[in-house]
Image (cartoon, rainbow, N blue to C red; front, side, top):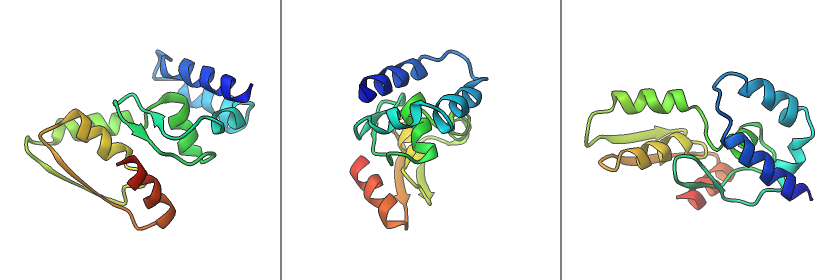
Length: 130
């Protein structure tokens, strides 16, 4: 039952049309609310809007955000994408789960990407995603 509710919530979060209000809903329903355990039951990897699958932590705050909305820091990704020239080598130091790097690599096939992460548990998730 929790898995079905989590899947339904994630599906609704991905089609949420407004940019404003996402943080309010997230705080009320997930961070301090009833959907926290439901979203944690969703299987790894999760599907991101950028067209790739991402391994996340089960109950981490940012991982919960990505599980609900299927995206993270879209304004940052769009800004970097706009500033990057063609045939760029992208180096992400402290890549964490690699969300921004992977999204940019999917958007820009002419770009070569390299992720560096020194935290061993996070590196396991990053390697699994790649």
